[in-house]
Image (cartoon, rainbow, N blue to C red; front, side, top):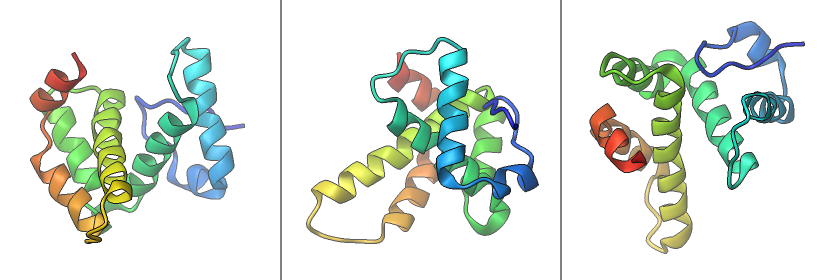
Length: 125
């Protein structure tokens, strides 16, 4: 059985072989083992899974490049996943509250282009 560690990129073949429920369970298990208390463990796990899935897409989305950039700016991989996942949750939240429609993917990608390690650190303090 695979174990998830957000500080290491999951093996692409093993991760892809899992269904979404298994991926969520792996992420939630990691946080339980690490003793991390979360307000909503499932939403937190969804953000991790979305980011990991998009990283595996490589250049098809800007997520992998953003992850690399944030790590070059000094975040560890887990914090970079949180930064990107937080941006994802913000965009989804805004889309749910908005009646104007718009392209959620493009809004997310624009948000990633603006995201920096310094900005994320300031928000998470």
